[in-house]
Length: 221
Image 1 (cartoon, helix red, strand yellow):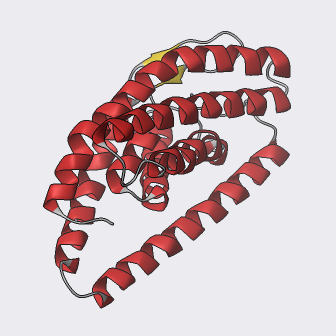
Image 2 (spheres, one colour):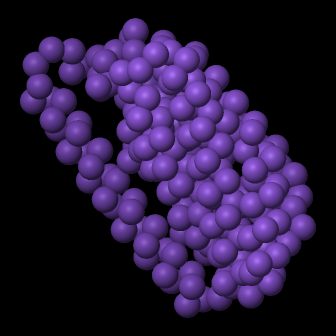
């Protein structure tokens, strides 16, 4: 659901890009603080750092592939699977997930024309923030619970964050005057709710496969 160049007025682009940059800077600072804390801790901090490096190298291509398939939406922009909630679940860190999602969207916009360069901030706010932060918050409610509860929370995290991202994108398009705002919000909301079922299943699958594997390899708590 990347918004291309030319859809959003310049003054709104400034707002989105400044806001997205602020969230990105805070996320980078949070991740650096966490890495420094790992180095100070005793135990398996080397394994933690190795695991984070492994995920940082393998996750962007995975997210890129997840977002490769799209469907057109009337009064909206084409929908793709997001993968942001999945990334937050795998990393157990919404800040690092947001950094990686931003990097993926930047590469997509520059080299593949998937979303706009000038509208990158709008896409980071519309897709990255709900997927990474809301998705992680919902999933984190299941920490310490049974495996079934985690899988269900993963599905809800993927579905809810995806629907919210679709609605936010509809609001952005309506506020920009691209489409009537109510039509845009309703259309993006309905299609996101349908496509979001796949996003929920994708995130739930990640809870079953990736999270359990990562917890066996290194401790991210």
